[in-house]
Length: 119
Image (cartoon, rainbow, N blue to C red; front, side, top):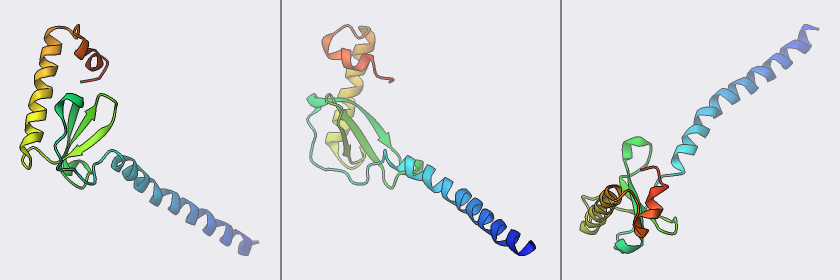
């Protein structure tokens, strides 16, 4: 009887160890889905952009980057502000537009898409 309990117990312990070991890896994989792994140095026209966010290497992503969101909902990866002047200009443009939209309470046509975003 004791010989039948030992294999069953070892199978249960192995399954428990596997579950505990694999859970953190799955959580880390979920975080990496929103990261830019590469960036494009080709300038993005500011007229197609809606908003942006900065990606920081220390937050679980492999590199610093700026992620621009277009009016059509695409996410485009650009190098950090320190590497390209056009990135800095696009961010300044978007910040100015957002400020203007907030001042007019998002009434202008070009502000409608920003109104529903959590900025």
